[in-house]
Amino acid sequence: MNARAVIIGGGIVGSALAYHLTVVHGWNNIVLIDQGDLPENPGSTSHAPGGVVANAHNKTLTDMAQYSADLYESLPNPKGPHHTFRRYGGIELTRTPERYEDMVRLNGEMAGWGYESRMLSPEETYEYLPFIDPKVITGSLFSPASGLVKGVQVVDGFLNLARATGGLDVHPNTAFRDVVVVDGRVVGVETAIGHIKTDTAVLAANIWSPALAHKLGAIPLMAFQHHYAITHPLKQWSDTDHEDPDLEAVYPLIRDLDAAMYYRRHWDALGIGSYHHVPQMVDPRDVGPDAMRPFTPEHFGDAWRLAREMVPMLRDSAPEFQKAYNGMFAFSADGMPILGESLQARGFWSANASWITHAAGVAKSVAEWMVEGETEWDMRQCHLHRFQEHVKSRQYIDVVTQKNYREVYDLIHPKQPITEPRNVRLSPYHAEHVAAEARFTAFAGFELPNWYESNAGLADELSERIPSRTGLGSQWWSPIMGAEHLAIRENAGLMDLTGLSIIEVSGPGASEIVGFLCSNETDVEIGKVVYTCWLTPGGGIKRDLTVTRLDSDRYWMFVGEGTLPQDLEWVRRHAPSSVTVNDISPAYTAVGIWGPHAHTVIERVMSEEDLKGFDFYTARWIEIAMTG
Ligand SMILES: Cc1cc2nc3c(=O)[nH]c(=O)nc-3n(C[C@H](O)[C@H](O)[C@H](O)COP(=O)(O)OP(=O)(O)OC[C@H]3O[C@@H](n4cnc5c(N)ncnc54)[C@H](O)[C@@H]3O)c2cc1C
Image 1 (cartoon, rainbow, N blue to C red):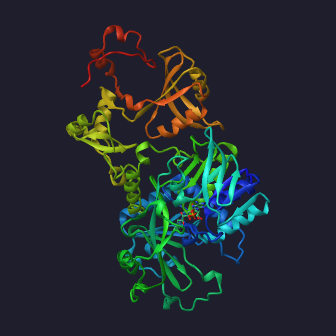
Image 2: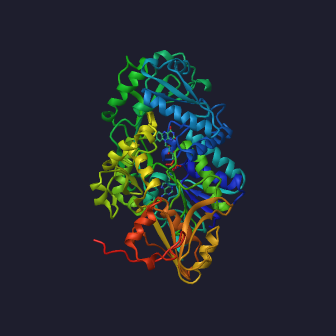
Image 3: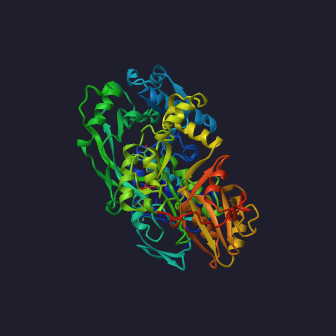
């Protein structure tokens, strides 16, 4: 058998990808395999109650969710109207003034991105949801684009549309065994029904994917059990006509963010989803054939208490359910999807760590990337190669994904550093920072100072010139930052630039490839520094950076540690084999000195000869002093 591409996994992501490749891009001879049945797969898609949440503080995720909702809505409804997707809207309940303020911010972000949403008072919320207790809430955010989807129906819809093009061949109950890679490129896929000759394979096995990805590279995600329970029929909804599809859910999808819970109606019963329990992590190698575990009522006690608080009609029922289970889904190391082509096995793609909410947007992006070489939306935050080495370690993934589960709906300030793991990487100046009473943030795993408490006196001195802040803006901020800023603007300041990384490009052809990647002329004199951009194939900006020419065939490209892994991948992907591309950051460190008196300071540590001709945008080796 041969195929233009093999998709491994037929959940909502794999099937949406099959749809995009065939229907949208006109590819044919696509093979999709799944270890289990389809469309009712053994994965998360078949177990989810189907909330599509069309809002998030993240623009990429919001674009993906809005696109997904539109596409799900356009799918045929094989079992009658409103069956596959229905746009009931979504309501984010707020129990505290702080949460309300956060939703006001989200409402503003949505407006800024051109999407509709509006704030509701407790009374207005009650008009939408006449079964909650409005006294428990401070208000809510309503997003009309949100809705409820039936995962199995969506998979069926995507696969049927893709099959109808004649371009898709679906093989349920066919396990993926291995991908065959020769000289760094995919040449085939081994499956339970034999070898498939192909140069393109896409892993869309989600919670199983880390166990199948050794040739692709690391997929830092973890599987988690997640509780979903449907009450017995409630007498308040006893007149529900089960034949009327309009009465299946009726109300908007509800997220009770401060309780880490969500609700939807199922005819005459209420479905309750809960993150309000200790994380129940499952190693991807131990998931087994089905993404399901028995319900653990001992973890549902708090959730039941909070549900009764919010929904008065539950107050006279016992915590007994007509259906309750621990489904399983994925949490990635940073909460974002993991997408893109492997550098070490070209032609092997990842389409993992997506929610149902974003699945069609994820599939659209992966398909564009495969077919056109780039995507409409910026994939920086979703890039397969975005993870530093420490993020790929088993222990880090364990700790960070459990944290992500616990904090899933938490109020996270945009400037709030990760809570754990901390102290993963320390700068060479860490002891000096501690001595200066640094308040640290974590950047790409490094502990770096936000400000020094030892400069509190400076802040007092300059207080009249530092605008005060209130509310959200005053959190994770100190007037000392303003004082340090003024001191640098008017005098000089030394910065720890450990977060600056160096990609060394050397060997025959180095000058040509650096020139190809950069928008400015980089074929400059040795010792010159060029500030420039990398452009994307479509003419967008990939990143800005400075490039230093150290020799005729040796350059240093200075990028940020945060994006270093994907920047390194970008250069390696384009470089010819004669050129060596290395991350040499661990061998060096960097400090920066800024301010009008910076020169006066360096004059004290450099000889006159070293200083001669040492102008802006030049680089040279100088000797200052012994370290240590
Ligand atoms: C209880 C619960 C509630 C949820 N609620 C929501 C919600 O309200 N909103 C939301 O957006 N998301 C929700 N989710 C999450 C959502 O269901 C998943 O994120 C989404 O379905 C993932 O889709 P997928 O296609 O990536 O993975 P899956 O649906 O898990 O598909 C992966 C497929 O890969 C196949 N596979 C694995 N190994 C192999 C192999 N070796 N060979 C071949 N095939 C293989 C599996 O059989 C499976 O069919 C919920 C999940 C659960 C469990």
